[in-house]
Each structure stands twice: as structure tokens, then as C-alpha cells.
Image 1 (cartoon, rainbow, N blue to C red):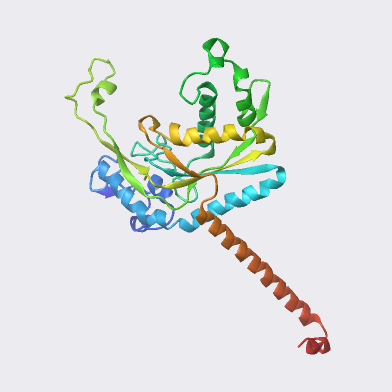
Image 2 (tube, rainbow, N blue to C red):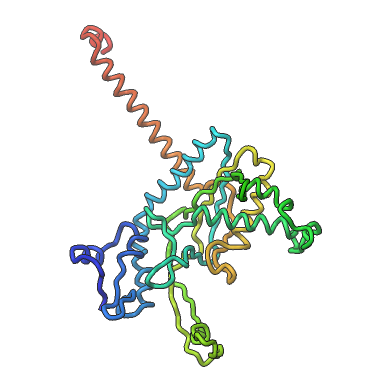
Length: 329
């Protein structure tokens, strides 16, 4: 039997929860088996993940307005930073394989996933993007377009001087010397609330990996133990935004190539070695739906300004003498 390990007053509400923060629900409001205390749905741990995927359809979809506001907040932040000499860098890309970030996060189901703390929507953190883009930029410095090591990168001559441009772009930290990078990375969010689907890991050699004495061989007669987990569905579009200092204008091509390699070759998140987290680049511009939402926001702001002016004028007219008011009529 499934139980909810918290106050009785919350149990009925949580069991009926169809809107709100899915990340909170997934990480905190977890039905557990009353005997094993493992995540469950119908007394089956894998069915629980399918239950979560189904539950996400209604809860995450309810957060579309919050997601749109998050994109607007980033766009407005970028606009404000222009006065400090930064220029906008945007990549609009589509997933062509499943994506999972935060697979190592603590979760009773063993396989976690990262959700934005306030919205409960899967996202890609800025720190992850920075690390990935920096690795891709380093690989671009070492290998040519055919995948061969460049002549100036033999083992004997690889040193920090080879990566001076990357230190300028991304910053560096040493014991008595450090420098801030020229790029500010922002978290990446999907353009629309994404669909989550169930994926599977199917370890075949459990006894081989868990034998403390190392005497059990990896063999086909071991029983596979399937583990199901949630991933972001292919086809989901994400927006990657960054701010680049005007001092980095000469590095723009390197930054662009690094993003290309990071998203379309290296992959984002976990399990990239088997093809997860690969994107297909669409444009170096804001998605059309974002532009539309931004224009609507500007129009609404202008409307409110005009309304405030009209009300203020009305208040001023009320203060005038009756004779002037009569004349204005």
C-alpha cells in the first residue's frame, strides 16, 4: 500500500495535486511503500516513475505563464546590461535526443533530475553551460575540423600559453592571481513547458559490480535489473542566453564555435557518451514566440504609462477653478 510520510492534513491535498510546482511534488511529496519505504505506485518502484510522468502532464503544463515570465526577466536583464557594455548572445536550439540533468541528485528513486526551484520546470543551469562550453572551446583549440591534433599541440608544448584566449573569455583562478571572464552565462529554459517521458537503464551485471570480494564474473546469466527514470522529451526547444563583454568582440567566433560543438556534438547533461542531450541548432536569435511576448509586454507597459498620464491630467483638472473647468468642457 502507498503512504505519504507527512501530516494527515496534507495527504488528501497532495494526492489530488494537479497544479503547482512539479519539482516540489517530485522531490518531497513522494508516495512510499508502507513496508519497504521506497517510492511506489501500486507497490512497484518502476510504475512509480510512470506515475510521475503522467502526473507531470497536468502539473508542468500549468506553469507556462511562469515560464514566459522567466524568459522576459532574462530578456529585460540583458537589456539593462547593455548600458554596461555587454552584448547579447542567444542560441535557440532543439533537442534531438533525450535530456537529463541532475541525474546524480539525491532522490529516493535513485535517479534524480534538476528542476527550477521556483517553477518546477526542467532547466539547464548556467554553471553547467559554462563548464560545457569551456570544454568545447578547449577541444576546438586542440583539434582541427577533421579531428586531428593541431601541430602546435604536441604533448611537449601543451601549457597555459596555448589557452590564453580561453582564460580571457572564461576567466581563471590561481593561487595568487585570478581574473573574471568576459562572458556571463544565464540558465537555459525551454520555450514551452516540456513533456517528460520514461527512460530506462538496464544493468545486466549487478552481482559483478556489487561483489565486495571481486570474485563474481560479469556473465549473461545474471538477471537484469531495469531502473526507470524521467527525461526531457526530444523535440523540446531551449534558449541559451549569455552576455558578452565589449572587450570580447574579437573572440565572438570562438565563442560561437564553442557553443556549436557543445550543443550539437558534446551534448548537455548526463549520459552524453551514448547520445543523450544532443541539440540541433536553429538560430542565433530569440524565438519568434519570445519576440511576440516581449512586444506584448512593451505595448502593455506603454498602455499603462498613457493611462497614468490620463489619470494624472484628470487630477490636475480637478484642482483648477470651476470657470477654467467649464471653459475646457
